[in-house]
Length: 246
Ligand SMILES: NC(=O)C1=CN([C@@H]2O[C@H](COP(=O)(O)OP(=O)(O)OC[C@H]3O[C@@H](n4cnc5c(N)ncnc54)[C@H](OP(=O)(O)O)[C@@H]3O)[C@@H](O)[C@H]2O)C=CC1
Ligand SMILES: O=C(O)C1=N[C@H](C(=O)O)C[C@H](O)C1
Image (cartoon, rainbow, N blue to C red):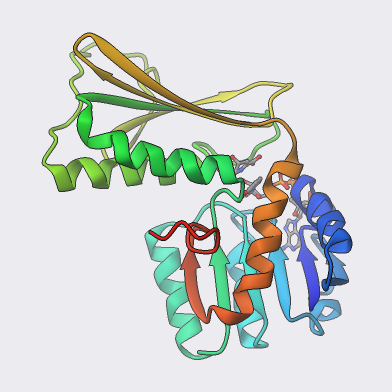
């Protein structure tokens, strides 16, 4: 299968190029970075995109227009952006796009475990910790985690977490994602880490995942590349591809 990588000069792009080159049955046909002519990727059957939230929608429109499927790790996908993508894909029903905020197996499992725990605890907060060269905050993974926790709590009728704060320096209580507080740490030496803290009277539960190296994302990326030609339309998350179901 012919594969091109968009964002090939970046941290994830470089790791993806190496992973594609090492994978049986995959052939790396183009490395595209900012400013390069995308036509060099026109021969690809699948594009991997690890670029920038400001670039990814235009890249996907280009791929879909040419009938090229895509595996997307770039963050910044709002519900509105996903709807726009569904609209683009409706015109090319043979094309598949897999978007995942996190391709590491551990992060996928953490999100599922957090979703399961959500209804049992009065309090919940999310902390994401990343390298300081990251453009977006909170991380896409933390936003997805918080949304999934919020949805599970709402479905179970759990009220908003208690919080008596009335005096606050702006930002001290983090971002509000669907009613769940999300805190971002940017620290040299880190790669990608997330904690979900649950609390109830007399106990807490902490779920933590650490990516110490970008190789942690590659099995998920390669599994998605192999799967996407058989998954027309939009797939959000790699749970199904890993055999976990929704
Ligand atoms: N889903 C997942 O598992 C993961 C997702 N990510 C996400 O992936 C994205 C990239 O992260 P990371 O690799 O660390 O970032 P980097 O900044 O290291 O890499 C991004 C690369 O994309 C290039 N680029 C920018 N615009 C375009 C464009 N239009 N076409 C082609 N290339 C372009 C950049 O070039 P230049 O520097 O010249 O602008 C840069 O080389 C982020 O959104 C991040 O959150 C990261 C890790 C895991
Ligand atoms: O920028 C990163 O590094 C990462 N980005 C993704 C995110 O925003 O969730 C995935 C992972 O956290 C690493």
